[in-house]
Image (cartoon, rainbow, N blue to C red; front, side):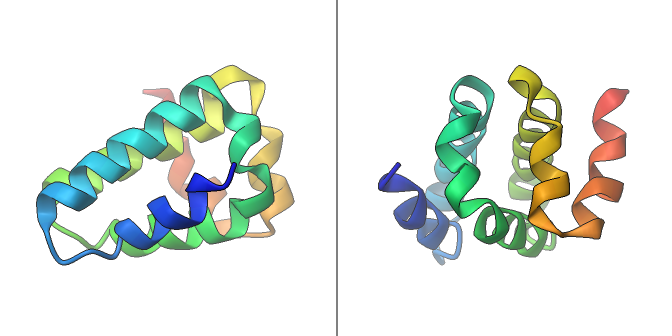
Length: 96
């Protein structure tokens, strides 16, 4: 999906509303079309981890994106492909 790099860039925007809407959009993509992010998975995980340090509103949506990616639509294998061990640890909280 060609929009993923653009959305990832918007996660670094200075305007909170832009990041908030982008995080929600990424969450819906990961939830409904997880295969769309497989080619950019490393970049996505990196941006999500960076965004966890953002304002609570953004960090909460980022957690939702990670949960959707980790557990949504049978994509638990995607995190093992990313090579990012932090992503696996952070996603454990999604099962609550």
